[in-house]
Image 1 (cartoon, rainbow, N blue to C red):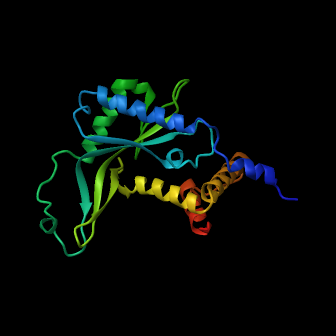
Image 2 (cartoon, helix red, strand yellow; image 1 turned 180 degrees about the vertical axis):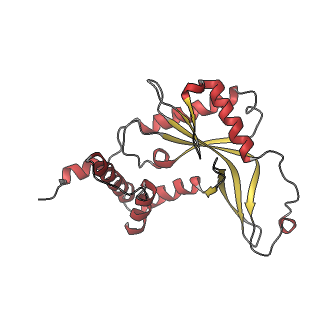
Image 3 (tube, helix red, strand yellow; image 1 turned 45 degrees about the horizontal axis):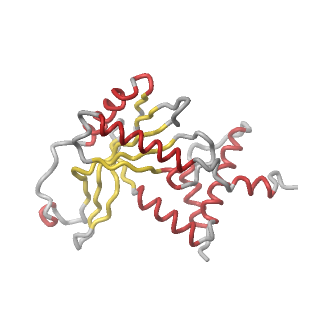
Length: 231
């Protein structure tokens, strides 16, 4: 007899509740209000959007933290093809602002808005701790990032600098859009299977069994992506 019944696995395919989109919208609005009210950030060009499991609709636990990307759009970092220079792409100017300054400014703004006891600075993000009326939210300060091709076209992503000094580049909006397309093309199997494997990982942990830190939720999503067939 299988350990997990078909009914259990069917339940695992579902989001935790019907209010997840509302939680994400509320978190985004909270961050936008903080930016608009802050004397330092209100004058800067900033884009706010959700990323991670909530934005991708693959979260499996109630009140799990929400990831919000706050991307500075008043400048950009870039990478060029080998053998080409800034001048080849007309990139002769640079911003006096920096990723470090942006993260520091955002941390200060969050402290002013919510108080230092409600804010926790982490290596790659700044967490607004949850309470009775808001879900814990990880705010990720990033900059626009451009990966140029030889013909001058570029792919737009997001770049962050961890407090440890590490730079990280990702493409959160493309991630969301690709997930939607994959889900539609697999008769909604992609996100349902992703939730099952994420739920199974939590179940193993809750049962006190060891789970490698290398087996992340993102890794499980990637594995499901590669085995889910398009119909």
